[in-house]
Image (cartoon, rainbow, N blue to C red; front, side, top):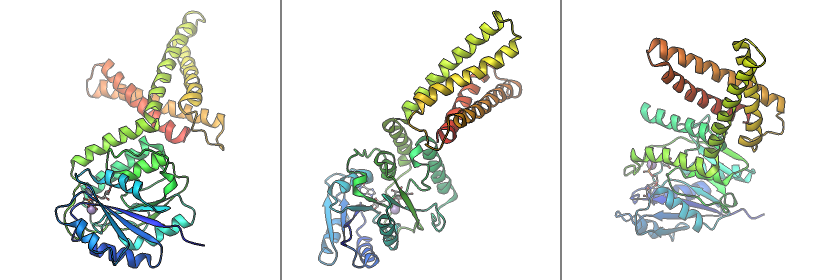
Amino acid sequence: MTKPHLTIVIPSYKEAANIPSLLEKIHSALGDYPYDVLVIDDNSPDGTAEVARGLAEKYPVSVVVRKDKRGLASAVVDGFKLAGGDIVAVMDADLQHPPEVLPRLVRAIEGGADLAVASRYVPGGSVGNWSATRRVISRGAVLMSHVLLPSTRGIKDPMSGYFMLRKDVISEVALSPVGYKILLEVICLGCPRTTVEVPFIFENRRAGVTKLSMITQTDYLRHLLSLMRRTGELNRIVKFVAVGGSGTLVNLGLLAILKEWAGLYYLVAGAIAFEVSVVWNFLLNDRFTFGDRKRPEGTFLGRLLRFNVTSLGGFIIYIGILALLTQVFGLFYIISAAIGIVVGFGWNFMVNSAWTWR
Ligand code: GDD
Ligand code: MN
């Protein structure tokens, strides 16, 4: 059986000093596996493109030069469009992504994975000698993606710039190079059915300097928001808030009815009204907000129970914040309550999204 062809997309900007060694290492790592390298260069002034072209006799490499510097992510998107292989890989030109890992990524794809991620956060992988600050920022970014973009949850390193995929995973989707975390786009919009992570150690840069600045970090937040919009996750939050608002009306209305007409003691009426509104919220959320997220092995009663436990937690958080901010920090009680409601809502959404309708 012939092996599926692999195209390795390499975005480059001012990497002339790294290209020869990179191509040589890729070649010896892949042996006789059928592959080609596609360098997408943004008109580097240091002659990156010329160096790569000069090696085309020795290695299967082609170079695309774009006139303007349009950035890493857009280079990768262009590379995807031009890639001829059935399998496509993305890696950096600066040897921070060790080519020795390529055969393991290929094996993962051959073993049936749609997407193989070279990962710093699975056992055996590491970020190398990053500073504590950079480690914390990176971990925080991963945590945020797990909370806000459910399809990234099973993946420990959704920010990796080193990965391989079957091309049909992305052939139907419009990738937008908003941020530079192109793997996030692939995971959220391409919907790979199976993803495998292969450990790797993020090496030190061989030559040159990084092109990604701190401005790129705020780009990340914009990218998250844009992906939440495009995957419908933002819409989900809007629905959840709308359902919660309707539940509050049910709660208050029923409280009045039970107290005034049925003559119940107001705390008893309040407890009953609270529980009825929880069930109300649950039914609407189960049908509309999370209607697409029911696992076949989950049961209606199981979800109802989880939703109840979560709501109780949200209620305790609300009361706790109300008391703490008012008593200890001396805030006006309405302000404390408003903060408590927002935090309680956030808790409810996140826990229900990650647990009740996971
Ligand atoms: N074509 C093109 N245009 N390529 C670019 C540009 C650009 O404007 N900017 C950077 N590149 C290329 C670089 O030449 C390198 O091959 C690769 O993109 C990564 O750029 P670096 O500047 O080395 O980025 P980094 O090492 O800080 O970031 C890497 O690690 C991150 C994980 O922490 C990248 O792999 C990121 O994608 C990854 O998220
Ligand atoms: Mn780098």
